[in-house]
Amino acid sequence: MAALNGRDLLTLAELSSPEVQELLHLATQLKSQQLNLRCHKILGLLFSKASTRTRVSFTVAMYQLGGQVIDLNPNVTQVSRGEPVQDTARVLDRYLDALAIRTFAQDELETFAKYAQIPVINALTDLEHPCQILADLMTIQEHFGQLTNLTLTYVGDGNNVANSLMLGCALVGMNVRIATPNGYEPNVTVVEKARAIANNKTQVTILKDPYAATEGTHVIYTDVWASMGQESQASDRNPIFQPYQINTQLLSLADKDAIVLHCLPAHRGEEITNEVIEGSQSLVWEQAENRMHAQKALLASILGAEEF
Image 1 (cartoon, one colour):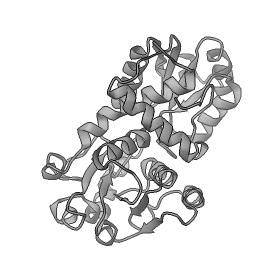
Image 2 (cartoon, one colour):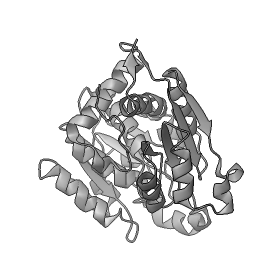
Image 3 (cartoon, rainbow, N blue to C red):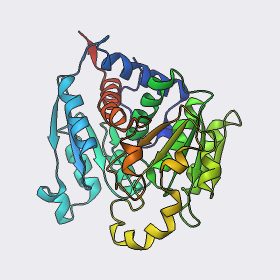
Image 4 (cartoon, rainbow, N blue to C red):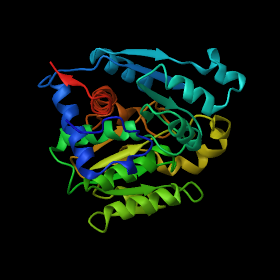
C-alpha cells in the first residue's frame, strides 16, 4: 500500500511517479476486492462549490473503509459568516482525521493545510483537480493495460482539469496534448512543472488546433467550456469553443481504438455531442465510478488503513 501516511494532497506535483503507480495499484485491488481495508477515521467535507461525484464518491469510499463523514456545508458553518480560514482550520484539526476541501482559490486550500495538522485533500480548486485525474489514469490503465506509450488529448478550456491532466500524464509517462483557443491556455506555471516532471521522456504539448491535437491520439478528453463560477460567460465562450467540440468528425482523427473521457457534468451539444458520449468509445461512466475507487485508495493510504 502506498505510504502517504498523514500527508496532504494539494497538487499532483507533490506525488512521485512510484507513489501514483502505487495508488493506482491499490485502487485496482480495492475495486476487485482483492484487498479489504479498514480505517475507522472521520473525514470532513468542506465544499464551497456544488458537487455530485466528488461528494458522493468521497462519502461512500470513507464509509466502505469503516469510517465516518461530516458534510461541512459552508452555508451552515461560521465560514459563511466570514470566520478566518486559519481559525476554522485550527478548530477542525482538533475534531477530524482528514479534511477534503472543494473551493475556488488554491491559496485558501494552502492556508488550511498550513494551519491544520491533519491531512488536507484538494477535492477541486480553480487551479487543480487531482482526485479526478487519479480516477482518469485508473480508467485508462484498466482499458489499455498500460499508461506508457499512450497519448492523451484534452480539447477545450485550459482549466483545473487540464492543469492536473498535464501533471498526471507526466508522472506516469504518458504524452499529453492540450488544445485550447487563444487566451484560454492552461496555467503557465503548471505547464512548466509538468514538463520538468516529464524530463523529455514524454511530451507536454500546448496547441491551438484541436484537429492536429487529436490526430492519432489514444484518449480524447474534454470538460465544460465554462466552469463553476464562470457560468455568466457561457454565451460569450460558446462560439469561441465550438471548434473544440468532441463530435464524430473530431473523434475520427484519433486512433481507431481511442477512448473518450469527460469528467462530468456534461453539456451535451456543447463540448461533446450526445452521439459521442453515448457511443461505444465512451468510458465516461466507468471513469465516474473510478472516482470512488481512486479516492478510497487515497484515503486508505493517507489515513493508514489496515487489512482485515
